[in-house]
Length: 435
Ligand code: UDX
Image 1 (cartoon, helix red, strand yellow):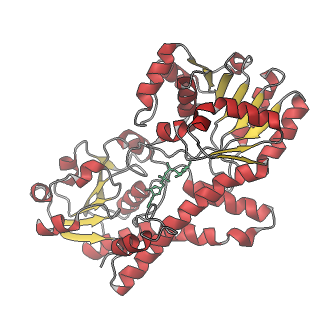
Image 2 (cartoon, rainbow, N blue to C red):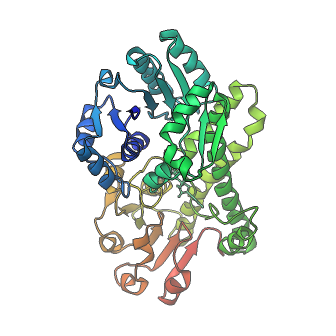
Image 3 (cartoon, protein in one colour):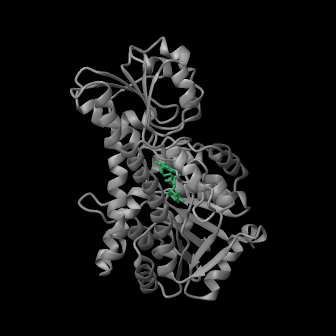
């Protein structure tokens, strides 16, 4: 008999995990406290943009293997319960808010049948899993807990879930590991590396990986600052150091830095947790990583002031991109939107365009103006800011678009446009880290 699976929390991670597990042939029920979200998913629709997930979800819902409910009792016959709820930053500090993780474990503990395995996927401060394991066994000694961090990237969520580059399982016994091996049998058949760890190491793998990625991005953005000061070109520098396989060329794209629902909050929660553990100094460098990252946003604003005027009141600014990265409609801690809002707050008239994230951006920042086409966005602009590297922006014809703006100045905040092409069309071209 195939294992029955529940996925608790059907946000980005949960909805993707539920659809992917169902596509592997398991019976899956997605549980969420938000009845509206449950109703949307049950119709086979996703409440956010993720390439490929809409088709997969529709297929799985119509196959009958994937259902959704807002009642946790409906998951009581499941063998494995994946916890996929969010752990946002708390409002009054750097730490992660564990309210949803705690309440899901309480809820699942109350309904889970004897012998079932609760598997945490949410990103949590180290030590959480061990505490939850004790709590779960206090509720019912016949329950067990494992931690199985998720490394999916938005925009590649389905691919990363079905074909991860590694599987990490934090377990306290062989039985838990063998249940997880049954679930991930198709990955094991593909020789996906399998790392068995204890609970704290499994939790740490996730924050260590995200801290490393954040460090790599801030490293290249620090080099961008030096290139600007010294008259160098960070894009050439990144290419040159990236050929060293020990360094590698990925995640060396200099620009306005990292945002989104993971990297910024994860490095902050890591600092907060390290301090609690008395190991604050070990990750003190992350404070600098965070600072370099936020400084990149200010550097774009400085460039705008340099090209327009110190006083931005009444200046017309076009912003291309609102999502925190391309192929996503996620605007959580989006560097692009942060820059747009700060420039607007300085008195400029900012118009934003994004192919997918406009609804979310408008919900969050209704003070900004939004244009439904690139042309309307840049019309009469005194400066154009390219802040999220969507493919459609690389395909813009600089000659044609020059007719629409009032001043042909562009700042490439992602180092993704073809500079020569824009220069040839008569634009003043600025970029972070390129003199
Ligand atoms: C990240 C991790 O990559 C993923 O493994 C983890 O599970 C969740 O967090 P995600 O938030 O989807 O995934 O985005 P990612 O692709 O890592 O990009 C994060 C941010 O860094 C984006 O704002 C992106 O624009 C920025 N970035 C990325 C750069 O500025 N330069 C780069 O070279 C790479």
